[in-house]
Length: 160
Image 1 (cartoon, rainbow, N blue to C red):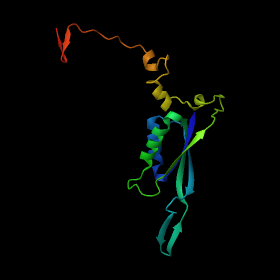
Image 2 (image 1 turned 120 degrees about the vertical axis):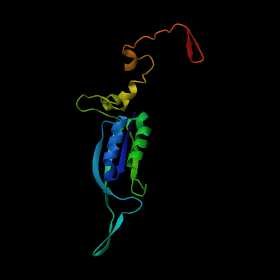
Image 3 (image 1 turned 180 degrees about the horizontal axis):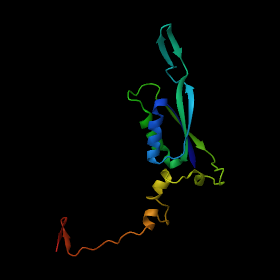
Image 4 (image 1 turned 180 degrees about the vertical axis):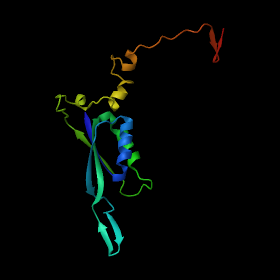
């Protein structure tokens, strides 16, 4: 039904990630300031009084709940936007969790209905894809009829 994506990224990449997600139609997200370290165990800084170890580095956690079919596109978008120029250690991690139920407090909507926002990734896709038997927005709008051209078409040219 739904998945939760939890991405731990560098602080300086938050704007890039938010813009990239908005660009693909991810509307709702939560962002938290967190501290932690990964494989590198932190960083060593040198100062006047000597060197010291900082093992809990500032990071940002981005949480998104979305439909199953949008997970891979969202992961790839976050990965591209959060990657540093040098691609070094500390760029972050992305976790994906199953979500059993979603309930919108205001309306009581449940499941995928509770995840829908105007202009989100699913609304954008609905223009192009609809379940069998249902017309998309694009199909329901009045389209001009094709005009027949008199003459025969021969090898990309119209002969009259």
